[in-house]
Image 1: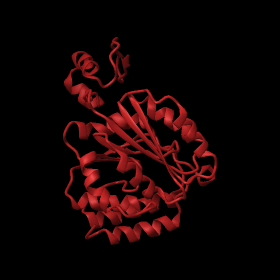
Image 2: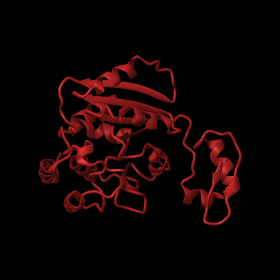
Image 3: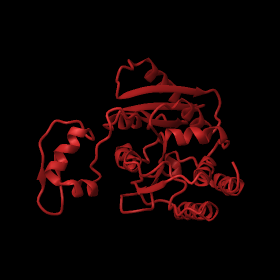
Image 4: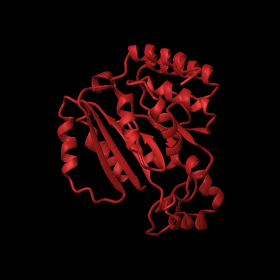
Length: 283
């Protein structure tokens, strides 16, 4: 393995599993503890389990690639796919996945089906109810977000600093695709409005990447009501009300155009405003 800096390349040679204690110790001995902290190099406990909840609706073109990307992340995972009434053949792919041998201890697979389309929030509630991992992360079924960033997003929780982590598309210098100005402006407005009522200083309330300690999420789960994209402001308000420790880290973003299958629209923006006001004071 090589770790590159602006100067010379530091080369390490070992066969340890990434993020294992042995892997971390090898790098720490070579680079030093301070450099490891700056690079996000740390150890994930052997008993740790990450639950990845993936709501799916008409994602035949991207689903299998996304599942491969999630499986390739070197963390022990429980992958929960919830189909929300797809009509484009996605269900056939999920049924094929169900018939595969599910004997990979690092990638346990669970698949659920909604008979009719109910919305992202409803699919997430189904997935959350099945989650047994130490931490639960939301992952869209398209390729806009990169699962390879899971280990970096997990670090504040595993280190005991955070209960909840948001991955921000608008923080830091990670690459993101340039798309719609008005969509960006809408995201900024909704985040600012949400912050006004939650007293948080988030930069991206509408992000897909939200990670929760399971205990925190299971406390909130019975109160969740929104079936569509109103889930984002709803969960944010309920996290804020509980005075949980929230961290925000920058992420990359490869956004889709509407021609490529993007689903959220202006009506969802109006619904988000209603949800911000609705959940500002009580669950």
